Image (cartoon, rainbow, N blue to C red; front, top):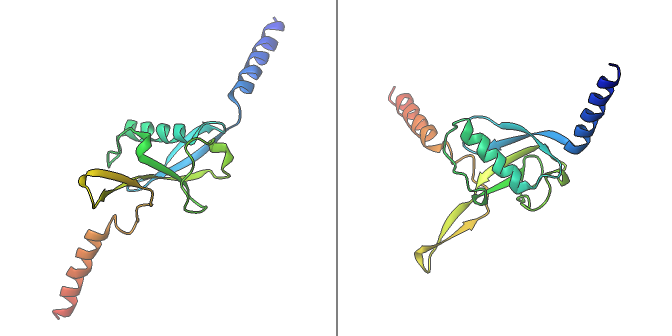
Amino acid sequence: MAHLPMQKFKKSGQRHQEKGNRFLITVTVLGSTGPLRFIVKEDDLVASVVETALRSYARQGRYPVLGSDFNNFLLYCANAGSEALDPMKPIGSYCCRNFVLCKKQTVENESSGMADAQPRTAVMSRKRVGDSWKAWLNRSLKLKITSH
């Protein structure tokens, strides 16, 4: 009977080696209420991480609805630089555990009208997300203050 636990230990040890190095990452989606947290392997590609983040986002029923095409999104390191991560590199090659997921913006090509829309790789400004209600609040407060 002492032989059985040793076999179980050996099997679980083998399974542990097959998993590779795994770590917890945090992905903040611009415009969403809170970050996503999930475990990835260090050799997972950035494109795979984006796809996993989109699936997790949709499964949780979050708003705004983003879609499922990972080619329409860019992943950035939250605390280093403004360069988008290369989708074909492993996520473990970046020394980062916190990421920001942004939707690629499309810009109309002025010469051809609406026929061509090219993706632009600029990060969407956080300031633009809530400007409308903030501007309304500021205007209404100014009216009340100046009316006295």
